[in-house]
Length: 382
Ligand SMILES: Cc1cc2nc3c(=O)[nH]c(=O)nc-3n(C[C@H](O)[C@H](O)[C@H](O)COP(=O)(O)O)c2cc1C
Image (cartoon, helix red, strand yellow):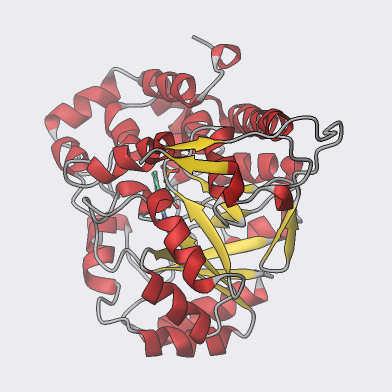
């Protein structure tokens, strides 16, 4: 199986599964507890049908959207995800090159393996920094100030991860940073020597956003410990309101699921929210993000830009979410499996397939711009 054999999410996932050591594949593919929310995120799209119009003159289709003051050429972006250099030695740089080509944006994770400064000095897409809230308020301020100096345009605070999710696949394999593999987990690395050779040949694995603050070398602190010991479960609305003021520019909350919270985000001056359950990796049993979208848009209207991520695998999924009022859609595993499968060409192929699926579906829907999509274009089955 090669990259040219990949035509959809499932093909990329299969190629990634063949190339990655089991513990790494399962870190990407896995979710919390029984993984119910993870499955539900995609299944929810199937309960909503598109309703096309015909004879609307759709020779030209404009896919651009503007969110939080940034114009994107396509209505999707790459969500922030951790540890990308483990998935492919090109890591975030592969994603950034692809994102630049498609004229969209990319959120760099706090647990990213490339520095904010490296991204901002080499790429011109709107830079988004995904941030976790630490107990140490001085550390929070220092990180925001560093992001500001690096030219970050949008600060994205993840609010659904004040403690780590129960990811049982990782417990079985011993996946952790630094590695603490079980014997079974280690065996799975041995049978994928190509990954190990590539990993060893390239730049050393680093977490540049955290390395001055957290000692992760020498097995002193693992990422699990980082979530448990350094992040602040006492984080409150007033803490975030202070942060929004300190940032003084576009601020976005990622992981909002209730209409009440969406309203509070408007009240404290956020420019955007991402309706998200972290790809099912945190609270299993949580409602799917797509099922929750209409309720949230109904409450906040156009007072804030509502984005959505979770389970998106098809251009038609993107169209359904846009029809219900999302302004742009985040992709997670949709670009991570292609990254793992083939680096930059993999991500480019996946984003290209997504763009052409959306363009084709827009024509078939009778819409020549994203603004023409509305609730009239969808029907729920019950
Ligand atoms: C391997 C992996 C790592 C992730 N790391 C982060 C992270 O560091 N910060 C964050 O806010 N979200 C993280 N996420 C969640 C994504 O940003 C996004 O919400 C989720 O992947 C969307 O679901 P999808 O993968 O079904 O598209 C991660 C997701 C995956 C799959």
